[in-house]
Image (cartoon, rainbow, N blue to C red; front, side, top):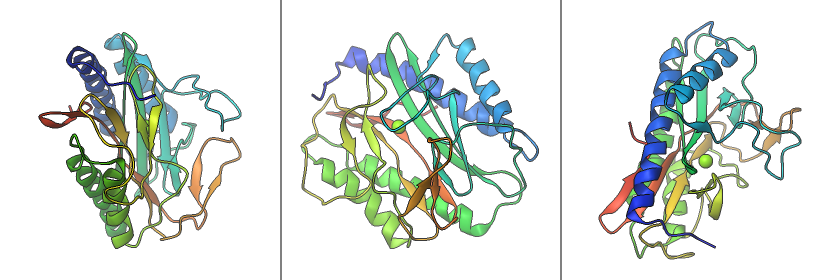
Length: 255
Ligand code: MG
């Protein structure tokens, strides 16, 4: 079932989205060469507590995972695509870091992700990140009442493929509201004009993730959570929570 949110509920989700934006900004600000991934998780926990919000990720246990998620951020570095568990790894010069974060306030969730480089960036990494952001913007632009789920999916996939990047088929966006993951699933590739018709009040998390090496294959880390590109190439992941309204798409996780 797809729940349509009222204007009041969208306002509540915007409050959660602002916390998500504040946490991601603080984490990106703190990320630097030599900083541990667990230090970034601590930064996120601090902002979260200060805002009176709860983590959507901590102790989350989806069907595919062997253990509850142990942190409030996902920190996925270089060949890690998504769902990296923060540990004692220290960031190194030129690392490509993707941070995914979800928060809830009064039972309403927001979910977003950013990718960035610490230290001296490689131009290929900057291009990968810029392309993922462009795919996210293009997908958001399609989110109008009367359009189709396939239009969103196509917008993401077409931009990734045109750049020669790989796309992991089994992961993508999702509905979001009182639960972090609601129907429908939002694939990162699709056929325009096909699939579910978009309606005002739907809220979707859109999350392009691209593999620089051009292959779609991935492997699961030994911890059963982190996805890595199979060819070891770097990956980027960006995400926003977006409401479909009669006045156009409303990005709930902007600062
Ligand atoms: Mg998400």
